[in-house]
Image (tube, rainbow, N blue to C red; front, side):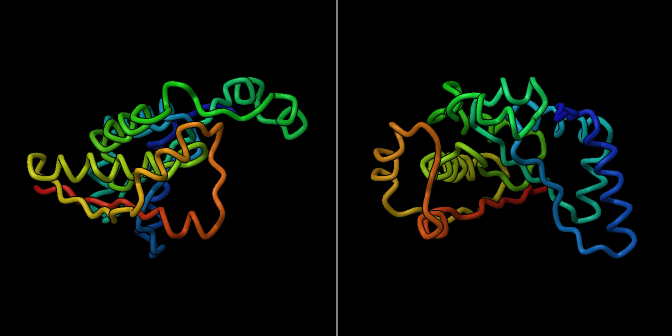
Length: 186
């Protein structure tokens, strides 16, 4: 079954470094569609093992895109497509609504993530707030953020406040979401 294994992140980082050394055009190592707690543990494991600095020296960035939905029952049972439907409706975790997920993104960045965004359950509202908070931090942090500003954030916020989970058309997603990338000075 599907089990959380963030402690294996340094082993994966080592494989990525080996592949890059052999000529693979690897630009980033990403952690996505996992609960934010698991992604943060993976980022910490990479840092403590020394792989974070080795990845940066190899020009490999870290990316973090957590799943904001409450799927604990599914993951605890080990993901099984047959059980998926019986696990109930998909809902965003209460602690990850609004600014809750943005706080996790700031933790990811402090833990070494160079790219940060959202996966399942994350809305354009959270990405907009993340963009705004990063731009506010830019002057005092020694980091440079490149974040596209989204038009209509107030409208998006209103539309998404009552949402159970994120469902956006392809055109909505393409027009409202941008990558957030930033670089560290020093």
